[in-house]
Image (cartoon, rainbow, N blue to C red; front, side, top):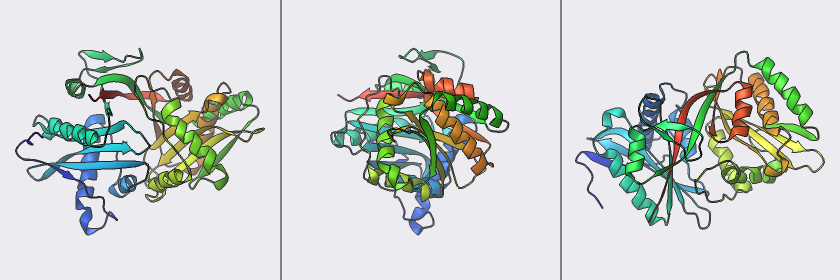
Length: 360
């Protein structure tokens, strides 16, 4: 085990019962620094989350172990380190992040944090490490994705990954839709999609998931990690059931986050064929995030992606009119979904690299 640089402490983060608890100071400070880091990287606050909303995401679940450390330099919190370990039988993967304020760069903190991540992953029997990072556009040398879709600059983060033994596997596009004035286009696109999706109907709900749809929704959630384009990323299959859906729901409802699920149901069979999620925090004037969207493989070819996205956005505009825009993420090679987003009016905002290392 390598010694830490003088002045550095990587302290395990305690997850308090409440954000107002006497033992919540470290969590509140981690949340504050997290938001500052994202502002430094992206130049905006659309990635920010209040500490109480973030706390709900960090509560323990059966599906994964979530390990977090705060990075302190001379007693001051300058960043956070995280490692998520899925708990499916035989899981091989670990998903990690290292996020530091720019003022803390160049002190060896990232290297020490990665040593901790890799050592901990090995202790848990993991052989594959994956990480995502936003790479803001700058002039200079670029790295092309091995998929042939997208590129990122050979920036400081990219050099860190490469020096640590990672390969760039995929580029992920962040896109943003301004909702003001979008309704006429959405209505026209929805009408076209409805005509192409004869035999399907739209159903929508806010949390909790209606009991009659829990099992079918759990199945669709389980397909996100296997059916969405993943390039060379090596994923373990996920197991979703009613208990996992309930845990997932609590991460939203405990934080007073508002989430709308829009699904397409095949009328004759009753099967759920596609779904889309929109979510906003307790501040309804903040950005909306479009989270998972999937069309089940056996139901593709009926414009169901356009159907659930447009139906969801129109319902969202009525229920949360204060939210001015929507942000979403897609693999750059996922042309079917990107084409839908571009037709709706989503514009590229930034790009992330998806990185992977196979441990010896």
